[in-house]
Image 1 (cartoon, rainbow, N blue to C red):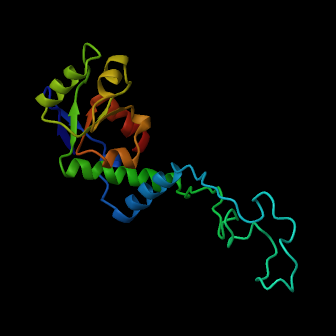
Image 2: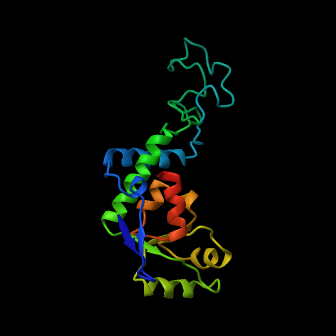
Image 3: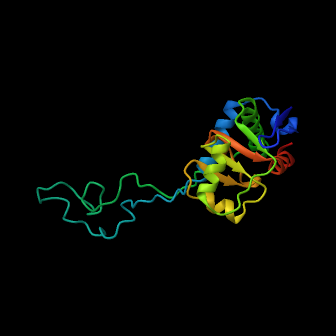
Length: 201
């Protein structure tokens, strides 16, 4: 399997182990769900009747007042009372084995190659940290919604891309199922490609 670089037209061989896998939709869905779940803070919290301050004394005696029985002014039925089913901080993380995660990444990358959404270049850099320079470079390549994968994000490229909507710049070790699928195209340098192959092949 091979692709051609868009800048020089040279043929680049792709490792079958990383870019030749079949598309496994259930596994990819599981990997994306697990990744998104792992990013949730899970810090939502409310107070139940046992957490709300006050309410230790019975508001009035049990019988003889003509009013309904009440044991605490912090009952969920009362204004200022606790929440009936109060939310508690929780961990939303889902277990996904490393082998499954890597298989999902291979599946996504292979599908990008098959659908011609993977763009390979010998190198990608800009001379100054200017957003307009990066926009002009991407327009030359007919790219708008793109994930740029480079071996190392330098200052110029990082500053130029940070204000662009639909453009992300990452290093190979920062790749994940969500950022690979969130853009129309993935632009990868040959050096970054080899690092990805080293990880997944």
